Image 1: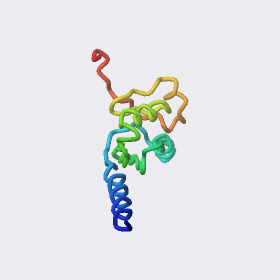
Image 2: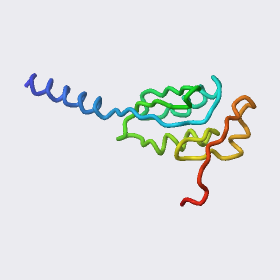
Image 3: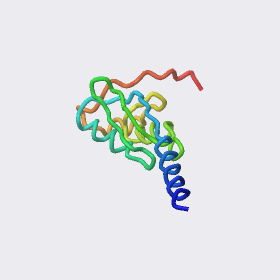
Image 4: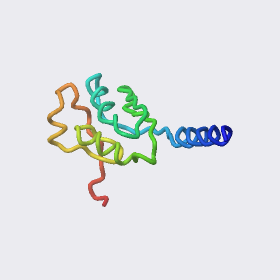
Length: 113
């Protein structure tokens, strides 16, 4: 019986650990204030770690796709004024950023659906 319980616990832990996925995507920003804002926006249920690099503008994220999608993460980041690969931030949110945080906006093909 103890073996069955231990096997069940090990299987549960293995499933939860293996559900974690690493991904990277581009997020517009400039400085340490941007870094803090972006990483805080990515601090969502299902996200284990988020680390944004200001030089490369790449967010390295470890998350559980059973709890949250990359699309949802990128939507949350765009809501606070930072363009992502999939979402252009609202112009009003972008304008509310501190002046030093006004990065060069990403080019999106407006003719695409």
